[in-house]
Image (tube, rainbow, N blue to C red; front, side, top):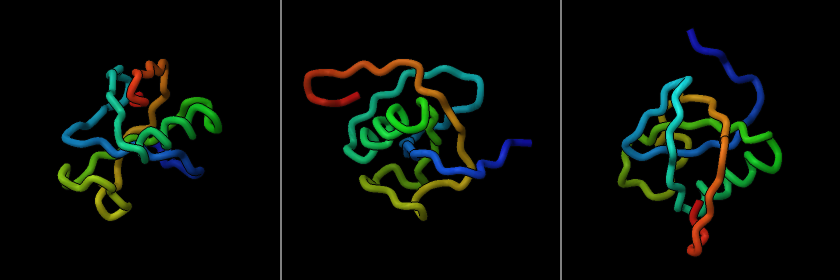
Length: 87
């Protein structure tokens, strides 16, 4: 059974993707809210972030109701920035 989070972590919504524990996966982060979540994770949470899959990938700015309630706590290992500001 999974671990319950008692604190708060930045949330990174995923479109058409589920990341399972103990896997490594490169992610392209482009939406402003997602970039902000990654930056907050790096600055305040030691790279810890919560990955939740969106129910409808067509929603561009998902809220709590647009995300599944079960996700994966992840650790950001490396960030590569491109010239457009995406991560």
